[in-house]
Length: 281
Image 1 (tube, rainbow, N blue to C red):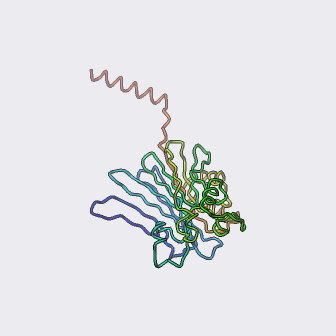
Image 2 (tube, one colour):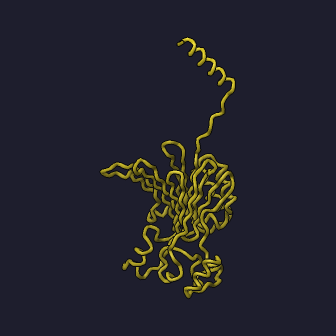
Image 3 (cartoon, helix red, strand yellow):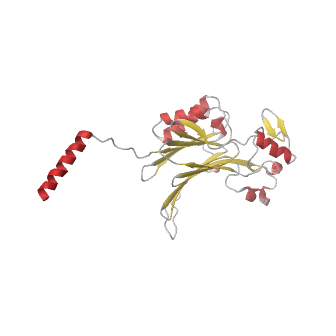
C-alpha cells in the first residue's frame, strides 16, 4: 500500500491508497474516512485460490479549488497502470498480450460518475435496493456480440462464451491480438448523490461470479464500518466457492441526520426567549 501526500508548490491535500503488484500480497484490507465524517471507504483484496494476484484497487482523494474529489477503482489484470494506447504501443511488451478490466467511480460534489470496461462491476444501494451502475462487458451480451461480429470477430463457447474462443470479456485494456474486437471504450453513468444513496460497492468478478447484487448490498448494509463490509464481502465470495482473486471497495455515505425536536423543550426555549425579551424592554 502506498500513501501519497501530494506535496507540491500549491498544497492541494491528496491521499492515495494503492496496492502494487510486485508485493503480491495474499490478503490486504483497510479503511479511510473523510475529515467531515460524511464519507468512509473500506477495501479488501484476497488472492484466493489463484497462484498469482492480478486484482488491484486504487483510492484517491484530492482538493481542487476548495472542492474535494474522490476516486475509487477496481482493476483486474496485468496492465491497469497503463492506458490502452500506451500498452499496445510499448515496444518492450510487443510479445505480451496481457489485459485488464476497470471499474471506477469519481465523486464530485453531488454527482457520482462511474466508468466501466470489462466485467468488474459497480453497484449502489438506494434505500436498500441494489442498483447496478455498470453492465458487464460479456461476449454474449446482445449489443456486444453484434458489435464484435460486425467487425469480423466470432463468439465461441469454450466453458463460457469467449471472443475468438479465447477471452471471456468483450471490452478490456490491452489484449493486443483481439484489439479489433475487444475495445477499451468505457460505458459511463452519472448518479446523483442524495440522502437515499447509502453505499457503493466496486468489485472484481471474483466477487460478482458468486455473490448477486442484492446479496452484496444486504451484506454491506449490515456492517456499520465500510472496512468490515468489504472484508465480509470478500469472505462471503470465498466461502461460496469463488476460484478467482477477490477484491472489493465499499464506500458509505453518512448523510446528516436531522435531530428530532422535543416539543416540550422547544416550548421551554420559546418561553425563556419571551421572558428575556420582556426584561430587555
